[in-house]
Image 1 (cartoon, rainbow, N blue to C red):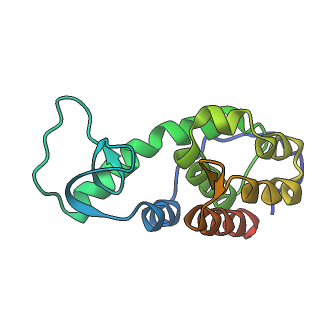
Image 2: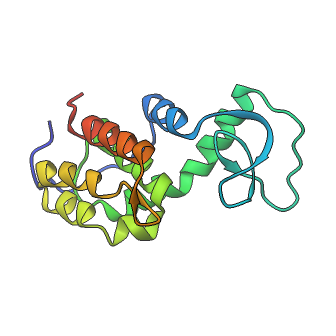
Image 3: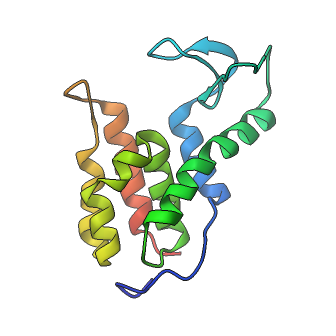
Length: 155
């Protein structure tokens, strides 16, 4: 495990294990559908951008889209986590950031604890992000539990 407070020395990438974790939360649709806020979506939660046209896609194409979509979260974690993380910690933070957005990650107490090297306290913060519309959401509770568990796993 990392020494607490060790200064970050490497740029990290999302692992295949991290991609698979995010896939489990996003679900898969081979054809376009409207997400909960009415935006056109396909694959593993890919928001269809203006100019993109999809009929039906397979898992390989959907995974490639997910990896591309995750690049913003990867950059956000790399740019804002100032201590060295292990791969599981990084993957958990990318999943969290992918779901909640970079601005929420940047302003979170979770990130503050990460940067202090207090990983126990950081892991406890995941659970506070399980609300939508002011209500606890079971799916988010499950997601946060798995992210926190992964965050605390040693490699």
